[in-house]
Length: 134
Image (cartoon, rainbow, N blue to C red; front, side, top):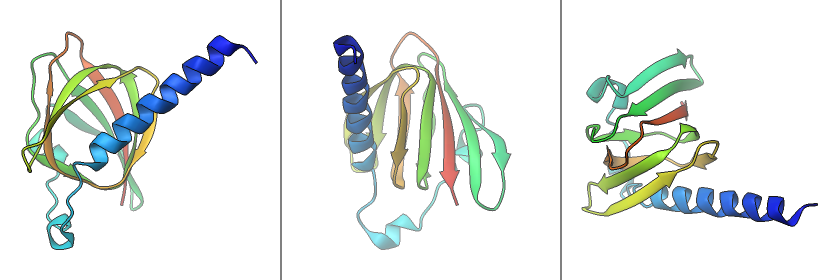
């Protein structure tokens, strides 16, 4: 196996792990608060578009242009796939702020994510395919 390939694969695995950890840190710790869902589709319809929905999943395309922000929302358990990457600043209800750099082709799993919003602080449109589990 080529060493360069191993390093690139390791780099992507580490990046995916960091992104998962950061988004999990947004998760609410209080069980009663976890029931307070804010539907991203309803609050930010210009950034979140439902591509498919049934009783098991909801598939969403997320687009955030440079300088744009979405509104406070939550997510159930989901997968994400970065269609086109960029730099997002995430802010949580608890006042935490952190930057996430999504790279094209990265895929990850995340548990439910608590109340947060994102701002595109980069110079490219971020596009992510989300599959939310019902």
